[in-house]
Length: 311
Image (cartoon, rainbow, N blue to C red; front, side, top):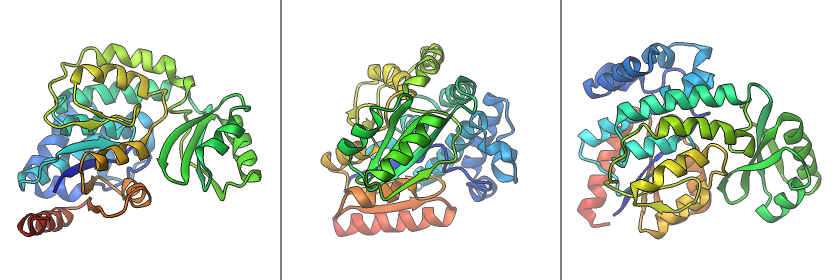
């Protein structure tokens, strides 16, 4: 049995996420308090109360990383460790912490700045839409002729996200529907994330990335930019800088993990976004979720059962 810890990205956040961990686990509470201290934000207040600020990029990123790591460390205390990690966009930072490549404190500092930079880079000028039921070749043929529209994410077979300037994304959406896309779903996002428009944001972020003391990876992680497993920590700075403006290859990441022998995927964090991608990408793997303390108990029991059965 090989286990991958998987982490969601921006958009998965919700009020109340991981509140039971905070209230009942000293390990989780310490992480929330440390994140508040390092970021200067009141993370528990942002996460647990009905606050619209949670959906603002500059707050979302640090809150989501904190919530996911609180659940991760609680799971680890029960003896569950990953053989590899992976995350969607922002989730890549959580994956790096879980893989031992950087400290939780450094990750909080970095995503605090990342959130500010990304929010300031393109205030309300862009948008993103999920395109359902169209392959990459047909999609690219249409959007390559539309200035300001780009491919943001390869999520799973039959689902690609487009990004760019708001008008260009809307125009591309209409063109793709005319050419056979089953659905085009606008996402709750005001920025042209993972597009060349964000290249300057990536360069600004690099100054903060270079302040981080990255460590040798304890386990490999799957990088969004390449869709491949990474074992050398020296590659991380370039990957994180270019990830801001590059396409996220989540489908390829999932396939690379499976090729490396991962047969048990545990999505840690609010929602089941990545689990949905995995179900559409792979067969014959087990997909588990950790969003509550009760989920931790269930996952621990299932992993123990598989280990005893020699699966």
